[in-house]
Length: 256
Image (cartoon, rainbow, N blue to C red; front, side, top):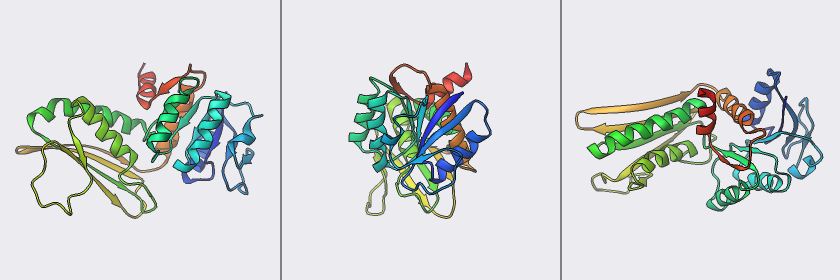
């Protein structure tokens, strides 16, 4: 039985993780952390991570906000409990702190917890390895619900980084062309954001060449895919040695 502390339990994703974990007999959420403690769960809810020090847990799942992640990182640094960081929009300083803490505790961070999205990143990188040198233009379009505050999405940036990495980091990112009156730079990756309605999350990676277009797409129909991915990551991370892990490690574990 894997025991979990869920940080951000009252958020949309926190509730979905609680519902998804509740039907599994190999996992149990033993405590939640959220500023709103007046909600009904089958586990106790605290306002801060510090209040959870006396609770035995195998892993922490964080699905909160960027400004709340520091509380989790500090807690992990003290307790050495492995943590799955699902929150996006982290600053460079926060990312560096995660890397530092991963030297003494197991951490897994991903811009998107869905297994399909992470496989999509690999496919996009493979396509870029073949097509970029052939002069194909690369564009990423992401669509999310009206409440999402960060743009572009962390997933879109992660896809761009994966594609750019196989191209030797030679591309720069273009987030809008409204103020530009010039032809497209062949060394740019365009990233466009759409916000509206209740779209859970769509991502398209477009490789546009002469007389043909290849599009790699992923569509999320429910938040449940991210909850399932977060729990798969928690299952993978529990008991792991200190280190900085990624969803590619989880995928590799699933495929073995």
